[in-house]
Amino acid sequence: MNWISEWALPKIKTLFGAPREVPDNLWHKCSACEQMVFHRDLERNLHVCPHCGHHMRIGARQRLDYTLDEGWQRIELPKAPADPLRFRDQRRYGDRLREAQAKAGQEDAVVVAHGAIEGIRVVAAAFEFSFMGGSMGAGVGEAIVTAARLAVLQDSPLIVFTASGGARMQEGAISLMQMPRTVIATRMVKEAGLPFIVVLSDPTTGGVTASFAMLGDIQIAEPGAMIGFAGARVIEQTVREKLPDGFQRAEYLLEHGILDMVVKRGEMRATLARLIGLLRMPERLPDMPAEPEPMTALPAPAAPAEPESAGPGA
Picture: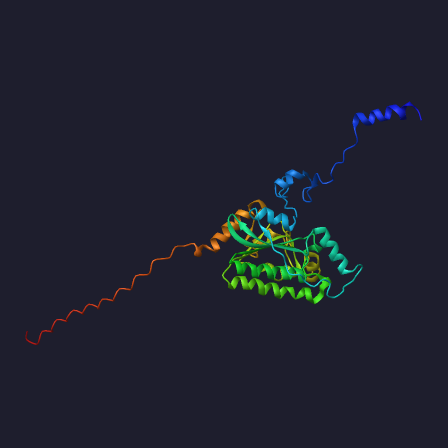
């Protein structure tokens, strides 16, 4: 030991202090323009890149926070059978499911809530893409059915925010059966005369696209969202043709009549409130005055008498 280690180093450590730990998530890189964005600026801009306008993927609860008024309440969902087929590939499906539940902090890939948008009461369901790619299994089907029943019970519009890779292959035919189940559930909302609005976010594909996600009274998408059934590469290999630029993107679908609107995330809340107000407008109109009784038809005027013809020699 010498004077450097015994005296100088402790003094230096005391002078400068211990190194502070810096969080790893202070800066985020935009996948579109590759610009770095400070996390507070990103949160303030609703996770939309301030440089290029790219809409980044967000979680289900985050989306509900951005869209609904404060004080929305999450609905507890019925438990669906876990791993009914005892499926296993490289890992057991049950292990994958438990890992996804621990990571996302929820039972399955959809969060259902009831709340309000600018004071208008609604029921909302939002997909969590980080939960096994937002895939639709028995739990997701049960969530959509529960949301539809709650909307009818509360006489409220139903809004669904989709972000899914399609059916959950680990549940086999049980997963495929959720397609007709969700279609029937949303049909129940329409038969009750309630608005059903779908907001398609990136990505929405597979069995979700082929079922309830394309049955909304109003079809909205976020800018740049990828929406389709099969992937573009699979389609190109099948039809043996080069697909056009922007194929399966929200703007392409809007141009070809598949969507009604493409709405930026910052304008989504006000747009939904306006649409719901328009769709439910007849309920707010005052009673119209009774139509007046039809007037009794006047008798047709008598035809003028024909002049008598003059006789011969007149």
